[in-house]
Length: 593
Image 1 (cartoon, rainbow, N blue to C red):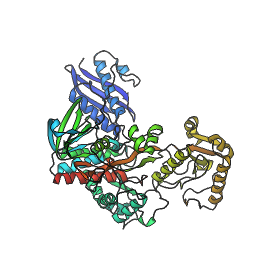
Image 2: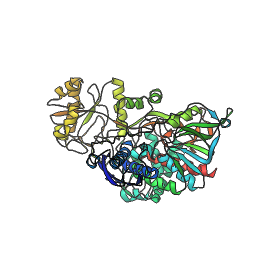
Image 3: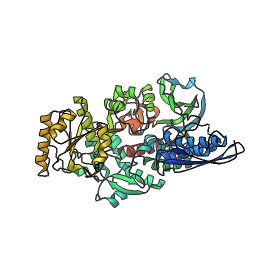
């Protein structure tokens, strides 16, 4: 290779990245990049790739899994820079984003968890730690931080090539009651954990563990303070949309938003702060290393005493002196397990967009079940309509429209929180075997969170068949294949009461306006942000067997633990709030053992 500084470009997720590769004495001395979008998952991935290349002094490395597109862009550009130094590519070609390097980008593949038992006497431990954690999302990192800060020798194994998992792709928003920020940003000056718990119990519809939720809500404010001490700055607090049957006395604005948060992908801001805290506390983090098997004490003793991981195609055993924490999320991308346990999640895997990490394949749940663990909270999925921001928050105005099922009948208050709304969509679509539709009129365009500001904005969805236009409601019914009489009647009833600004059918209060021709129908295409399913745990996060007996040495937290989210997602900030609390709790408790 020729010595020098070589510039190359590649298309990143958020824009073009320019990478400068310095070569000296026939090896890479340094790689730098410009154009990395701050406060994004791509930033975390790109920086890890730069670190990987600089440490190895070579571009002969794998892409960073977890955000492969962004890390691959850095690697592609660095490879092109090297090829210019080798005379294999011109400088002009290197700066053309359409030109790829001659060598391919390799992406690691990971083994699946092993569903068989293995015993302590059958393995040779490579090393031992007090606490071993599988997974580096919100629950895993928080457990690691607290365990290490409280004196436990802690190691965290992450399946992907970067930390964060699905937490990275979240909006980073967290529910809590009674915080100083709630008092600062909202009118709810006397909110408390008891009201928060009461709301969760009601939305849980009898399918949640009160003890887990009580523990979460009592400690949620402390979690907000804890994150503040890590460097997050809180800038807003808002509430979820109405839940039709909810006791309004228990409602409050509780969804906390930090600086640079509140948008998809903003969870990485929090993960970056937590990662630094974990490293500062002395946590050892090993990437590209899935935990694939739990180690039992003996054939007659179910106690978990360690784990087997796969690292660089080798299986290694590690001993856990105090406990193993499973924090590997739910069965989000596990088609086989979802088909067996969670029909809603299975439907989404087959037909809908999944917005969670593709490495969330239920590994912890599979390993727990192999150990005799029971399941809890296996009830559905967390879905949302990100295109229309339907039901996202009480700060977003619901525009004039209504939903109809495959028969042309309305079935839900459309001004409700997205979890309740998307469950209604799923039930209607499953029961009738037909799509559900959002019906709106010309006057709806441009109102509230409506993504269409003009008909030019509609062209792509019309071409894709997801959006249909008609001059009359009868013609619209024919185009979307629903009963003409039903849809006509639905519109007539809606317009009749909308002229009086009321909705006696479902009690809706926002966006109740007469719909004017021409009419539009958009096929609902909810996106999936996670499965509702996990291992059965007690308030100490001990994993329980099928007879509710603790499996000694085995713990689960976050979405790997079940029973604290009901049959639909009750509102933004619930998953992160509960996951952070559970991780912190189990980390501290294990350190004390």
